[in-house]
Length: 109
Length: 191
Image 1 (cartoon, each protein chain N blue to C red):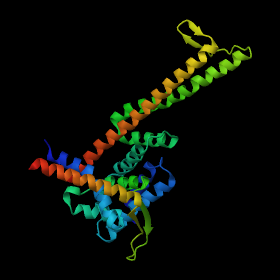
Image 2: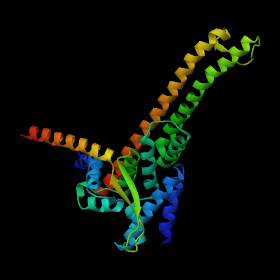
Image 3: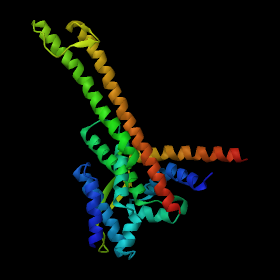
């Protein structure tokens, strides 16, 4: 048994959910997502995971993106925001997530 | 911008060649934006930045892997992406992917050509011309052109679906490889 394997499986399965949750609150740019998740070690991810995932969510029209100039002399950033379709999907995910938590706590009783 | 960071972006760009230009420009621009942010705000050295991003090959493979498993349709572009992905994935891919992709393309093509050839033969037969080299044979037994046409449609369909099956297999294999590679990458971060 390798607990790290299990942790990475959980991360894999929930990352999409976490990202949609974050972006549903406000628009984020890629590196911002990475650094915020970095602060939560169980969810920390690499660029090679996040960027292709964001691209897929764009293709699936759950997210949209726009480039925005910065004021601090930094290069423009690509921001992601959630679409109506994304919100619907996120609601469905939230439901299932609550189902899962309830089921697990029932088993734990 | 530092030369080694520029080289890194150029490598990413060239590995992503099978993707549409607009996508590629966008991807490179986004990575560049993070690089500059890390350099200017976090004050990381170019070496630290490249270490954080991982090898250009791994990053490009992640993008290609995700575009392959995104949809199921067969197109020339997807064929190109699969080929590029295979050239980046190494040993096992070196055997499995060429076999399944070539079979997928070959069988699909045969599936289309078989009924076409039978149709031409049939048309020749109708105007009283026996087209050489085209005939439907089982061992020494040759079907007459009229019977051969419906048989060829069935054969064509079988070949076509066999080709599709191979294509699906290719996609499955790539998803599996991506998953394993992703797992290895996650492990790196965990340690």
